[in-house]
Length: 83
Image 1 (cartoon, helix red, strand yellow):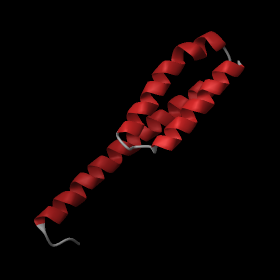
Image 2 (cartoon, one colour):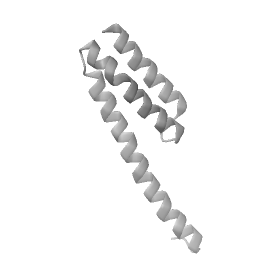
Image 3 (tube, helix red, strand yellow):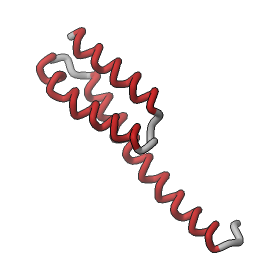
C-alpha cells in the first residue's frame, strides 16, 4: 500500500480514469460491431461519419492508439464502399 498522500490520490484518480476509459472503449467497440452488421449501404453511409468522429475523439484522448483508429476507420470505410 502507498505511504504518501499524493500516491493515494494518484491511485484513486487512476482507477477513475481507467473506468472512464473502459466505458468509452467498450462503447466504441459496440458501435463498431453494430456497424459491421449493417447490410444497407444508405444506412451505413449515414452512420459512418458519427462512428469516425467517435473513433477520432478516443484517439485524441489516447483511449485508443492513433494507428488503431486509422485502421478501424479504413476498414469501416472499405466496408461501406463494398456494400
